[in-house]
Image (cartoon, rainbow, N blue to C red):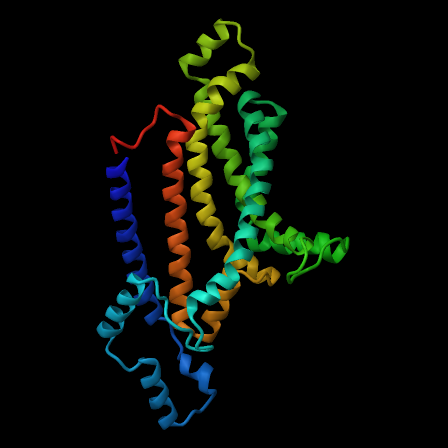
Length: 308
């Protein structure tokens, strides 16, 4: 277990360095000048030079990169070029809203995907199977931003049941959570159906039926336990994907999360905020993958980490 943890920690740090380096150089290639956002249009040359020196934007690219890596090694994401506040404090301010949205979306996706996926797997070529495939295909075909607009038209404009955008009570969370949850459930339904159908074809299922076990008993005692690891893996990976999907959805519904923070930083050419936010989201994705791997022995005790 100790060797496994050391190996995973090493890979985590390597991927984080690679992600941070890629983000740094991509941000440098973003067109636009952050000084315009700070000084306004047609600033004086003296003001530009003074601000460039203050923000260390006139340093060579290699020097700025090494400074960025040094800060990253001590969890210092720098200061916003616009507000001059620490990037990490801004991220932590917006992070809870993104967590609430991600958890609510995941619960919606699971509540839709598990019943439909299980019924489709056990009742092959039935109406349930057709319904699951139609729902999955439609959900995968419709982009999340379009789904969000359609839900807004239905629930806010036509029926006036929910607020269009903003934050406050739980009612503000419903539409963005539905948008992400339905999109995620469309993918999960197909995966759950495929994994369960594969398990139902295994020899141990035939043996269990020969012993007189019912479908419910076979599912609870054997099939679900063996299918849970790939399903948990898929859900864990999709939780990371939700973070990228939240960028668009939060912007549509003006939900004050990391996606809104990132979009605002891009508009303002706030390079430090862009780097810090994307790097933080990449770290969250890697941590989620680590936790998924760590959960395997708890789901199935026969699986250990000593041999990894």
